[in-house]
Length: 364
Ligand code: F6R
Image 1 (cartoon, protein in one colour):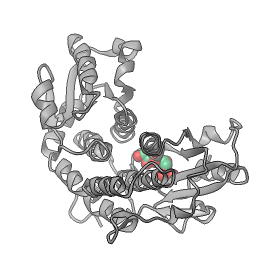
Image 2 (cartoon, protein in one colour):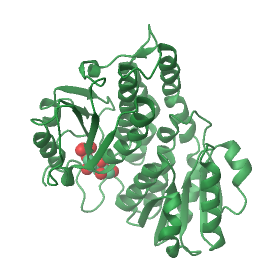
Image 3 (cartoon, helix red, strand yellow):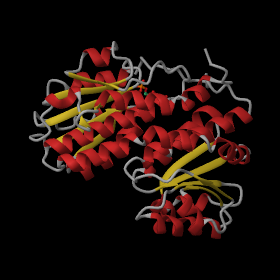
């Protein structure tokens, strides 16, 4: 049931404020204002590393979470796509905590990676939407993301709920490693609890995102740029556009532009920049100016302060809610998803059932 929406994907994007709150309700203890989690039995204090393994969109969620695990918990992070991880003979040890992230819990590569790692690591955790899945059954600790059934082939609400869940895991790891006082933890939990409201505000920008997407729909190639956690979000935005609109897209770290991809830029290439006003903003703006100097059409997603200072020369600026940097990558997932959705819908593509793709990839 599409509940009045034209596609399941649009419905599921719109469900994000609601379902992200389910994950928060599960992982936040309202009495104490602290995280409570099935993962409290994981020994992050003694862990030497966290190993995150997944495919596709779930893999990009891991890359965003890496910034949280490093910054908050000072925990070394290793990430790979499941299909590479299992065959490259990664050295693993009992001091590793291995985390497998999968919406379906049935992805063959992720499951095989889990089976490969399980005998070698200290603890196997899974972050899943389907808690009755094989990956969940074979994990010592299961962290549900509680996003509800995801029908659209393109993963949307599972992505933001994976992020919320991984954020709670990073906070827990930081606490165990003596990096967070209860007051600091409460502050982070309060910030994270604002994600549903900010997701709703980002969704309210849908008309402007749709207008940007219609312009983009004529392009042959699109570039997505971001720094820090917005780099993996740029990769996710490019993946979404490719898989449902069939427009070629690439995500890059903003600073990498001049090391190659800038050669692609001309007036026919839209360049999507995901950049809230943070300490890296000025650097991103100078990368944007390099694009504009070559005639590139910049579509900038930023907050109101960013829009005031950096709109000049951009073909389009879409204002996103002002939020704490901790949760900004969760909030900016919305424009990444909706750009792809509206471009594909405008082109008349089968948004919920893109060609060649299956919801659950149970073969290698
Ligand atoms: C992209 C997408 C895929 C999945 C990937 C992993 O929109 O849906 O990239 O994210 O196939 O699937 P799960 O999370 O079920 O393991």
